[in-house]
Length: 210
Length: 358
Ligand SMILES: Nc1ncnc2c1ncn2[C@@H]1O[C@H](COP(=O)(O)OP(=O)(O)O)[C@@H](O)[C@H]1O
Ligand SMILES: [Mg+2]
Image (cartoon, rainbow over all chains, first blue to last red; front, top):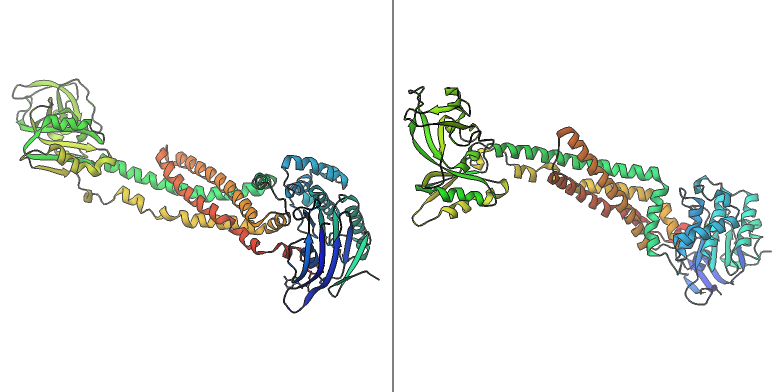
């Protein structure tokens, strides 16, 4: 199992607790959404799950799929996500470098991934020239190329209109590699609803939404 | 973030970024070339002026020494100096009485016997026109209206062809009214004239003193032109040129420009951080990019500076390019070292901060 959080609590300033008593299991192949308004601690939770932030209290256990080492993690962010002047193909290929691959293989794998997200026709276009929805598809392609154990998406549809948002969220859930555990943070209920499991972050605690 | 980037890919990534942004790359390389080339151009100009000064002083005999001794010097020893590295030419002179030409018995000229090596010391442009014969100063030639190849008969009955004419205005104006005979280096001469190459003239005095030293032989070595006779010293002018230290601030400015560019592109660095590049990797990427951009700009800049200097002032020497290139290279090195400073503020961000809503 890639990531387990037990009794995780976090405060930045020692007074206000952003997270409180979080228990979370992210199993391979599952898709989990965390919904909550802005400032509710979603990004903090993702950072802790991704190993970027050490929680003030509690325990984070993580392992790669084969049980050895830490899990390979990929991120999809709301913005600041692409190298604007590089082609769509090259941006996607970066995912393979993260996994320690070579550029030559990366380009091959990236072409496949672009086809999977429906961007094959735009492979040679520079990333800045893609629309917002296309750019997020490209981020998904890059995440596919990385073949991560853990895929963390922080507001992946934050800058998209409602229809495109749902479309992108659905794509993210559909094309993710079979062994990948997906954790999506969003403030948008309809985006969250495409995931198997939806949890709400309320007052620093995770609960099933009503 | 366990498995991570291959080192080769970390190194190639900056090149792919440079290629993907041809305009930005060309502009930054061009700017670097402009600054470093400008420095190289100023340096080339300085060396040009120093070389011109050096040539002028050379021309006037800045590296000529005259050796004298109470009872003269062995002519053969004097001529033998020509075999030493560092010595351009050397020869002896022995004065005799004054002579008059047959055609104008009332004109008196100084007569002298010289060994052949002294002629280029007195007149660096001297060319022997005839095989043997009299060598006369320019004034003699003018007063008697003779040219090389003409026959000259002296009042004492000696008669020979004029083998060459000496222009001695720069170095030994007295000899303009001399009629000299070139003799084999035997016996003694009253003075030995030695011209050194500029690089060797520092050791000239000691060398000459030792060369002629003998028991009871007090040799006197003096400069034809003591150094204080010249108001300007090329070596000092080169060392104290104001731009000699310009490489440091100029390199700093270029480095800061490069740092500014990487600061402007901090979101790119942030993305690489999210993509699993560690801090040292970010610094490596910034450093490699700076090395490529600055060294391309350096080569381009020195090349155009050399081209401009040649177009404006004629051919330039390799040593000049080397000096200008060295100054510009120092600036380039400073720039390369300073350039990655642009990513330092980024290193202090934690990746988690990049995730926060902006
Ligand atoms: N580095 C930090 N220092 C202090 N407070 C922070 C820091 N990062 C986040 N916070 C606070 O923690 C709370 C949760 O932030 P965040 O996890 O970004 O929420 P969300 O992603 O749901 O919008 C907010 O109140 C935010 O102001
Ligand atoms: Mg957030």
